[in-house]
Length: 491
Image 1 (cartoon, rainbow, N blue to C red):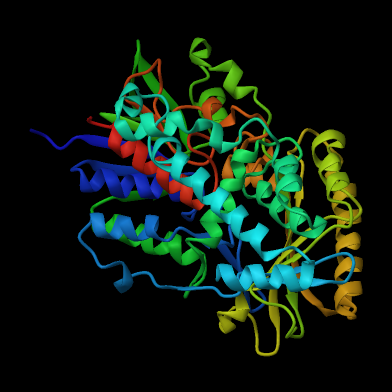
Image 2 (cartoon, rainbow, N blue to C red; image 1 turned 60 degrees about the horizontal axis):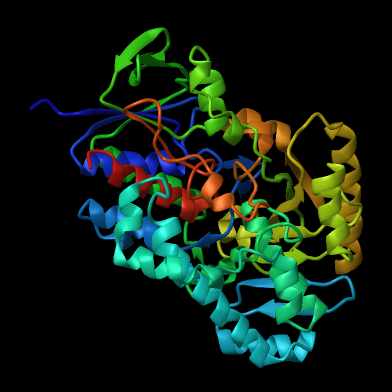
């Protein structure tokens, strides 16, 4: 029999992982990427002696990366190494208090009690509830498709279904956290996890309180060669398995014949395939690549509320700060007001929560000697036509004022170089509709069931992976989407 042919649209992390899995299954795989580099959001760039990871900067669930190497018969440690973080992150509150989030649960609970006046016993009970949500949801909602009958026919699924009330879908994250925890500052801490998938803790279901377990129990890590080494190591693995990457090669159209996807149009050439997988945002997959088949559009899904986006300043800083670590958070004084700006007013608070990542803390050659590379990010609304130039200029000054006040240093005078990424450029560089980082938001209690499936219900041979489809955005879930697609193909 001839080797089956698989074509993948987009070399984001999910597209690369799908390519690896299909190559292991015996497919001849080609990947078409519009950019001149792989990785999508998980990319890098250099400027004036500083190296920046352009997108995701928190690495969790490394087992999903390791699994790809093992599938190919390789030892992950020979190609990709990382170290576990402790502490995970430093938190700076508006009242001047500072909280260190330790990886060890007992140290975390003790620190919460000492600094935030949060009883340690409540913290431990909170983590147990987070663990329970994970145990109920992981194998059913994250590692399998919700759109296949076989998912719901196993005993494991039945046990999870019987425990569904425990996933706390009827309360919001904030209301659950406020009920379970007594310190306002620790409530703000746990509310922050809604931003891990671009949602609002004052609207999103308390089911998302599973996220602390992923970070606390499984840990947070730093790849020894930086976040972009996730991309480069997996691309190398894929190429060793025979996958061919075509950079600077945008797909023009998905070719269909009746109810079947049959080929891709690239550079006005038609390339036939047995399987087509889109790692492009599902919105653009339909509106752009299937524009001739509007009857196929899942309008309810495509019109769902988008997740939040980000405004990122990449700054070369001409000194080092001993009080800062790899991950740092500077909280806003009024968290609910900040989210109201994002979700209701569609603009930016004058006191945004600031995430500051400094990879040169662990990888010194990312900055010149005595300097640091600052990745400074705030959450912002998706692009719906706002005056971004005005919003960015004001946000930049607000961020500088806040960081200067917290550090006692004139941050503006320390900036040696600058690049900016905003919702408009996120959309243009990564084909993420409206610059939304995670596809649709999870502000609806049924959000897990409303994401687009990993296979088309109307076109045979067409599959979907990446953050805009099930099970969601972020590196771990994108990698799981690749697993779901691979398990579905040929099954």
